Image (cartoon, rainbow, N blue to C red):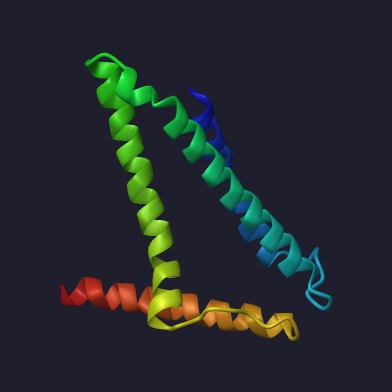
Length: 134
């Protein structure tokens, strides 16, 4: 496994940690500790996405490989990763562009969380409605 794929695997494994931080009662939501920790984890995951993309583009590993089974397998893995990224990023696109949610409040962090839970729930409804009507 090459370095960009290892970084992507670490990022994917951080998703349960992010869910645990948001749903755990171990962290206080009164002073925004839970939201701050979740935001830091999300930002770190975003940074690793940029890093592994930069490394993969810089190295151009797949392009320089000889034609064969290994190259086809790696292309299939990259296609799968791209489809997962698109699936995960689609609700964010809906929240930003359809619901026009651009910025958050610094006061009332609990209200931010509730608003985002509601918006992402509605985004799932929109995705489901589009799938049914298509």
